[in-house]
Length: 220
Image 1: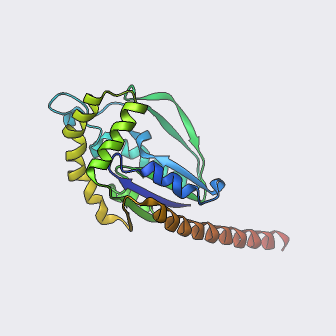
Image 2 (image 1 turned 135 degrees about the vertical axis):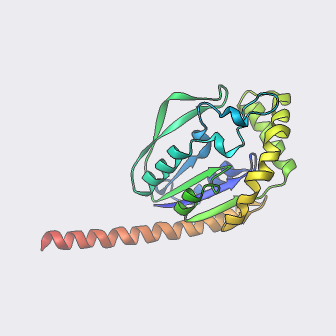
Image 3 (image 1 turned 90 degrees about the horizontal axis):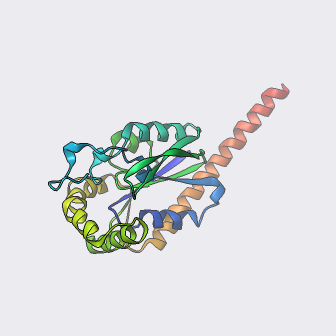
């Protein structure tokens, strides 16, 4: 399996970009894993804001141990049980959903390039660099329209945690990226998907060689 990391600030268009990439590739050969699924069920109080709210934009808001284990398992060809995170209750649901290992995995989230152990598992490291006002507008529309948030709560969270955490932790990830993408993502998605197709072709060639060797050994 080849794993492509897609990082960027909240509202930078990571999921949209990933879907554009997938649209150029055989869907049977590619899967996507969202880092948002790995938010801790209880946030560390040490990182709460002055107003007493959880800081979901801090690196320690995520279950890194589970995430590392799951990515390692997928890389080894094993299926995983992905947590289901409920953004309206800010908690994990009881169930999980199964994600099978396919030749290509797109791993997207705000901190996909943050952890050195996970960076070693990535074949391509991508960072979406989008201006702050665009990211804020997209986040506002998403959280109000899809996650039942109020305008005031989204705005307050942006100034309390989203913006300062972006400057402190998210933006520096760009130094690890092999591929930095701006606001025009169509061309970038085409370029990335072309490399992914090469990975798939290489994987198919390898599997054919292994199959031929196994057949030879069986008949002899």
